[in-house]
Length: 274
Image 1: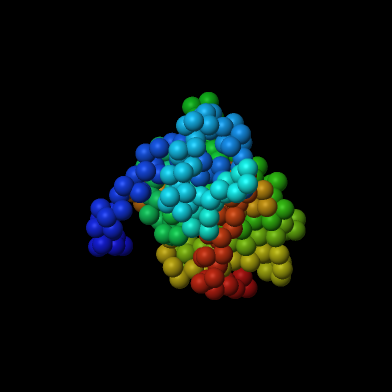
Image 2: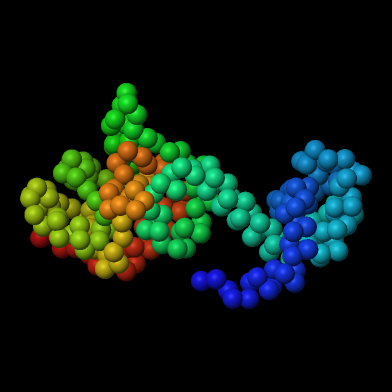
């Protein structure tokens, strides 16, 4: 929800706020110092700027109490660390949104819980996998490869198919630890054939668990030990997009996916397979 005083706050401090983002060099200095203390020579190398350009910028950051000078080096102050942490989040978020802009604007991202929407920058290093004319099953094929390579599988999904259910059943029977969270609407479908028949094969398999979330959702997310796969519904429709997935093996993305799984699992109840 928008803070009713945010515009007034911005108006009062806009010069200081704009100073950071208007100057690429100021931003680069702050981000460089976030990784640790730097010498002037270090900052010249990182920013590609001369000492004559850097020194006035460093003094400006010192006047804002974001940077402090030490013998031969400069470093962030505790206040500077707080500010740069937020800058880093914004930089990664904007980069992630723009890098995968076509994927985000054509899909229903409102189905992603708010805390996870705010951290979409963690998916910056992901790749969008799409079906192509020469291989219309490209997305499905690559998803199956992710499942078959997994040492464990944590998934949150509002959709399934008999083929996918059979793949997961076979993996569970082979000993792959699998935990699934589904909404109540999908849980009801699992009580009918062909899913009900497959369900019986999993009774007594300790490494398989199915949870039902009382919180409705519309997305398909799978997190494994080495991959994240995210699928969404087409924007403005009730149609799940089978032709595109966001896939990543980046540690940030893996953590994002695991935390999303835990978010839904925390409020879900275990489904009795018997």
